[in-house]
Image (cartoon, rainbow over all chains, first blue to last red; front, side, top):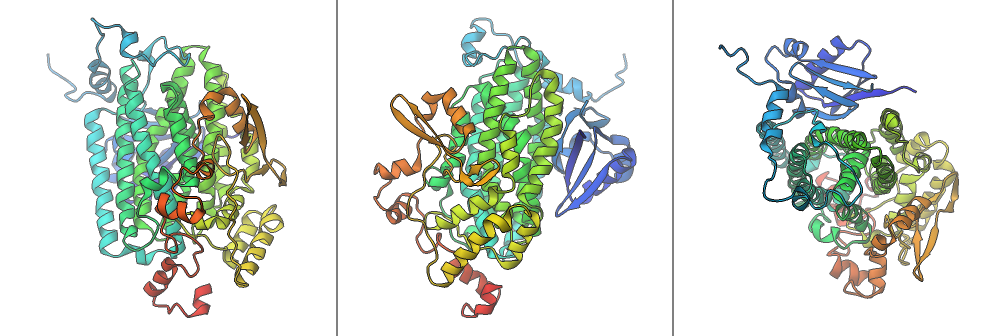
Length: 89
Length: 511
């Protein structure tokens, strides 16, 4: 059985860059646009890297800032200063 | 020595600002300070194993929450200043908000109280901090929802006395009793019920597709509070999953206790969400996804991944999961046809779905809608057209546990009513399902105390002996304004005047 992890963002300016960063770092991820939100899902694992998000945003970005734009997640969370990982092990 | 990192990393900061804020008591025994930690039978050997994956400390919490509030209230202001209510898809949509404000927002307040209470009952500092933050979050949700909907209250009926109604109105005892049941349990059951079963497993169904639907119906204020609240939920959900894993890892004796709670609270949450199924399929004029699709995505798919992950602890999917999965083809239709008949006693309006909406349902529910439900609407529409809009004046039989009228059907037998009864100490009790009867069997002394609205009316405890008196005097529902059919209601007339349509124009009326 497939085990998808997912993250949903509000469809806003920050999130669009985060989604770009996710797509770059997770080529297997699928991005779905729904009214007012963007849902990204992937088999087993999805990673958000601070470096990539900062490059896309063109400014410093704290991983915890993500809490402002995220709507929902599915999967076990592993967060530190440099990345945010969702996974089913 | 030169300090290399002037900023603490997340892990260290969390350690210093959370765990190290606790202390070992010296002149009182721990058991006396945390007296409720043991009676449920849950064994915790090492609280330091508690993980908060977000590692959120109070300073960061205030910073991000303040930012969320600033964004949210800027939108509320813009919405109100620009008369945003005039730009929604159709005023029928506002009825979903009436149900939300009287059914859901008071639960946010109950959650605030619940987390404040259990936050005091754990001897682990990590758990106490997490509960404290969630408690404040829930209070924020209750407040922001009331602020968002206060604008609608100026223009539409039925939104004027939600907390009063929540404590009294027949169908609102469904959400109320759900949270009262959780809050009347011990602290670990509360976390399993609310943090895990509700927040992690089920709330996506309310806050993700329904809120996306609010956006699709032009309700900027609601989608914004919904998503703002949900940004906290992402943290709550993570906590819910960590709580379960933590308890299961602490002691093998915890496994059967947790499994029973998961069985119970999955089912109670599923019954509660039957109200949401009808909000999604019937109360959003512009539709995003059906209840069945949302259930497949957010329960069958996400829940499937989750329970596969929990297998290693000896946890299996909830006992009555198959019944819930089967019900996705029927739930919203059974609920809406029930509410349609009892609109004389609700703070919102009901209506027959329009032709395009019924066609949408035929497409989304190919196995069931045309066969079982469309004929009912066609019959009801014919009756209404002949001047006999149907209202059911017999009060419904409520389930002793979930308090939903016994309106559901058996799995695989959509024309057979699901009903169970049990005799306990000489009294007969009725249930909507085997799952609710199971819950009763395990704790009859709790559920015999249920405050069932229909029983209370018949016993004369609701300020009147007929429905009209109870509705007006006890519920504070204004007869002829808040209740009955939508078509021709004051809300409907008001909407037509906003849209510049003369009420007499029958063609526009039916559009």
